[in-house]
Amino acid sequence: MRWFVTLLLKESLQSSQNKIIDVSNTEKEKNMKKRLAIVTVSSLLAMTLLAGCEKNATDKTLSAKQETSNEDVIASGNGTGGTGSNSSSKNKDIASFAYSDKGKAPDGTKIISDKDYRIEDCVTLPDLQSMTVVCPMAVVTDDEAEGYIRGNLDAKPLMGEDATAKRWDKLTIDYTTSYKNKKLDQSRTGMLAIIGSYSLPEKVEQSLIGHHIGDRFKVDVKFPATYEGNPTFAGKKITYNIKIQGIARTKDPSAEEIAKAKASLQKDAGNSMLFSKYEAAAQYIEDHAVFKAYPKKYMEEARIAYELEYIGDFKTVANYAKEKGISVDTIKKQENDWIIPVVKRRIITEAVAKSLGVSKDSEEFKNKQAAATYSEDEYENLLYTALDKIINKIRYVAQ
Image (cartoon, rainbow, N blue to C red):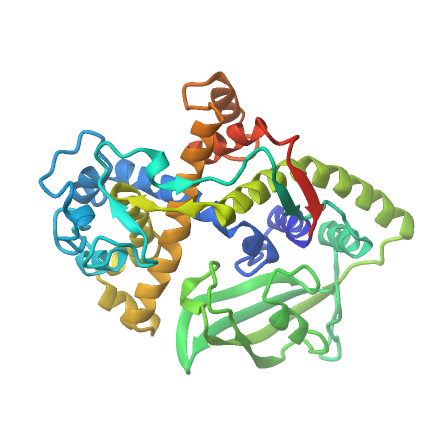
């Protein structure tokens, strides 16, 4: 439940004047990375259309009325998706990353033409009526409740160089990041960080304990090979250069206050459990499905979304690689790692919806989309609407 309480704490901190919290590395992101990826595709493509960016490439990729002689090029193994009509006009050199020369995706799955394909040609689903799914349980701890309380309490500034930071203190810090002594663009000035709130990488947060106002120090953080929060950090040892500007401390909450907060958070967490069940079920289906092919259009849309998200104004992969201090091969791997899960989730969404008799024309979907309780994204809401049909048949077990 750390991600849930962290999210609430983030919201309370952001409501305070001049108090900003960095959540780029929270547990929440780890648990929700697949959801963020699929939302990113639809939202970024929508932004592209609205802004007029990449108009030619987007029109060719997204138009349902597309007529092109390259319709079957990738499916037949005669194209790479590189510099042809399917490429982004801004980032032509990245386009080839999405496809091999033989009509296959980077994971070896066949890419098929968008013309007259059936979703059944793309995936074989597991038995949707008999699933045992591992799902995180909505249990709030006393520690999390205390952290939430302290995040909402006024803190008294500590004065003097002898003031020493300890757990739950609210620190005002500046930090910059670097990789192999080259400064990176992720930095903050005047950031509010509560020790114990997971607002920074845990190693960074713990390193604050014992330091004093005015202290300057460094801490190295080794990020995992696949890191959705910031792909440029993936697999690297990043150095955080930190200065403590101020330390403030709240009063200690009473046992009664902690119990009351815990009950309130538990109620909110219970309300969020349905979302957790949706995502756990979707992940189970994806993990147990047999993927046979990816539609070319899905690959293209995911590729464009990746470009907009990570390449952007750098215009070329070479520029991006130089600026970020990473190799083109690393970018290639990052793109492939990003695209494939997004494409798989979209295929799963359409296959599950079709299997359970749900479409975007159904009243159930329209109601869920209008309510936007868990998402404003139509693909997510289509999947959740379909899963509503079987949610009570799924056996959920604690993580």
